[in-house]
Length: 388
Image 1 (cartoon, rainbow, N blue to C red):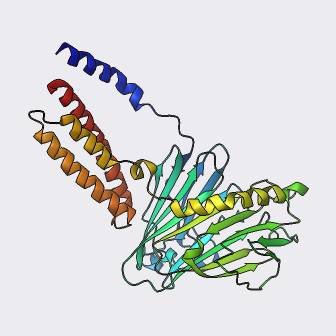
Image 2 (image 1 turned 135 degrees about the vertical axis):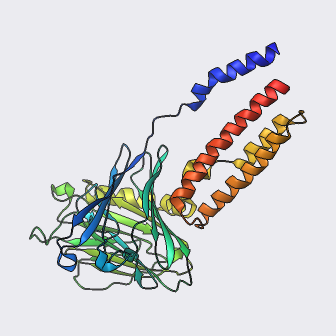
């Protein structure tokens, strides 16, 4: 009994050290939602909802902004065509702060659904935010992810259909480096892809091949930080196997990229860059060097928070059973291990497959149950020490 007491005391003394973690290298925040009165002509006087969030590390901060008209005149949803997600940081230009991407499911805009929830999913090795939209055609779960020591913003759009999906249309818009028209100045926009660089041409619709031109960099040769002008350019990459067609316009003010996403896609994967204050030559060199790894990262990216995705329930349960071995009175603990392992596996599978009716609540429940499971593992250790 003396030996067991010594070991138990050592374990108890070690608990604070085991509980300590490194300070988060990537952080996330979501501000409370606020209401404003719209001033634009389409929704003048209407009730609009505005909410901001950010993802930060030592290299960059991506500020995000949700802005949608929730006026009662639109019924229980939002207004068709309302902005969904803007990017006011790190640059005021580049990916548009008023809504840099839009999604239509079977022709119905995501803005027709009100934002259900926006929450911090994780911090540490990476920062993660999640947004849930209960759209009429599918539950939509948007994940925004920033790794520590990385300037790329990963975005995944998970879809859980409520019926047949025949069309998925994704639209992206940016104002490379500078708001030319707004400031009454002329620029010289370019769009660089893997096979061709397109010059500025208002109204000209281009058809890049998504199989080979699965990324695009947008910049301005006049508003180049190397010349002391502008904010620098921006870029986006997508998975070529997910997109059947693309249309691009390199305008003198806005540049757009519209993607026909294959309708059987269930997790749309994107990566964004904002080359804030970087000269064009430096930014484009950095981008092209990062693209091969970015493609691999997009394909392997798991939108689940790392703590949930990497928690090896089966291995931990097997190790706990081995500690119990044939000890007398072990049966209640073994039953708890069986029950909690099954519940954790079920919840994680539901989240991974996008089948959770309320992803925010399901993610929190999974985190709470993981903490309870860790406590059960400690209960097993103490039981084995006392009865071994």
